[in-house]
Image 1 (spheres, chains in turn blue, orange):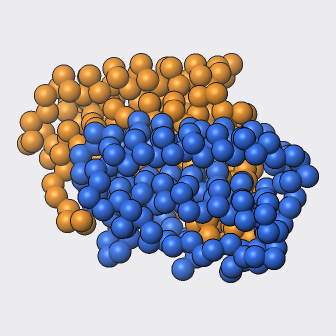
Image 2: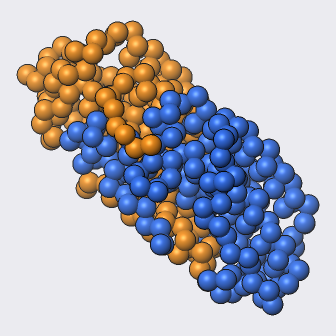
Length: 184
Length: 184
């Protein structure tokens, strides 16, 4: 089944609602080997990724939605700080971040629902500081896809910790050959 | 923190134990848009991936471990059927598969623990039909990495469903540019 369809807010929310529990089930209580190691240099660990998701819920998605609803394309979004979680997560445990994300996301989704966006609202346009014009539906679908993007990254960062242990099996593990594909 | 260390069975088990609940939290109750669509052609949906994880627990990991412990390199592993889940999952719902995976994985890990593998057992060698000699620790670390490999795939397959909806934001979503990297 690959037929596409129109963007549906309830389908995006179905993912947004599930991400905190999925990360909790995957990460809570795991040894630091899995949660605090990265892919080298300044790349992110699982801990960093959860912090980033929290930071984005706080400073990116809903603030940008409000910006569109209030200012349209006349006032661009504030730029997002991609390292913002470093300070925000400092001194916290992973379990604290998982708790924080669960509470925050519930609040975020409740606020999103409370806006009672009309289908025509989904077509309203704002202005991204780098990407130019974007619609509400592009912003909200990206919110859900961004969760999946970081689940994709997280599974890769974790798998990376076993890259030497798996020996010749690495040939069959696509995740070991993924380099992230992110724009710089 | 990127320092590597030796393979530890308890760390692999920590991941194996968590995968079913993580998939359950992510997938149960999601609209079919997310769970039954694939990346086109004969690629896999989330439903197919959960079926594959079940099929691999049944026919691959523990049977291969036993083969090494009983036959060493003298008798290669049986080849794994990469489409084996198609028949095994037919007629089942995703919720049934999630339930089945949770029960099966609990059983698999209990069986693995009951073998009381000694550190020296981890160095024992078997023979993979295509890859040649592999050790117990390579097999078991691959079991855990294989869960992560398919979580990586699953998040990509789900994100793919939103590839047009996200518009220009695709530039910032590495997952939209991942092509899987699997060996053919």
